[in-house]
Image 1 (cartoon, rainbow, N blue to C red):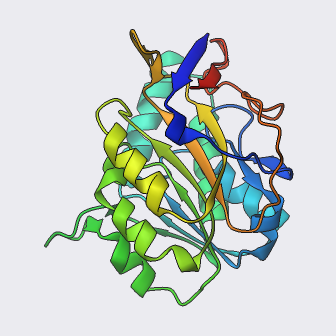
Image 2 (cartoon, rainbow, N blue to C red; image 1 turned 135 degrees about the vertical axis):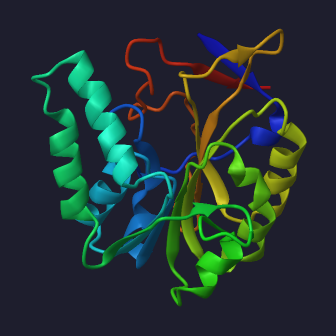
Length: 248
């Protein structure tokens, strides 16, 4: 399956990319140079997958601050009921819960808030609020917030001097293409990798991917050779073909 991207997505691939996180959905390619220069990892959007955060800390034992208000007691009960109905002898949810309790403790913190809105309730916070609560100037961000990323792209640009690296999922790219273009023009970290999420469709007739995963780097040395998918890329949906990207 082949997808097309406009020319403003042109990039120079990092020559030290490594895969962090799951083999399929939940894993991202990042620059090793950024990884080792990071002293704080902030993960926006966790749900039931903290494989990126867990793997990152095995490569560089940094503090982790994750944000997601969807993970509460009801979340685990609902997951447990669903999995039990499917297979009473499947202990996946129990193992996942124990893994969750093991990882999110000590210097690995989970803050039960959604990021992107500044509201009066306790379930939301702004990107600005996140940065006010930390002092680090060497932050790596992982952002997968199901469309809310467009609410704070300008704030990412505003605070880019504190960012070592960034992986971000961009949703509904066809609707937000101009916002994405503006972000790419204003964000000074180098775009070093692009991956299309094959859980989502391509828009026809232009074959634009509806969900993209972008990696940005401050410290990577760039290669003149770009090939997509990269040898470390894996399809998010392992039962579907990977998407090949052509940049016009």
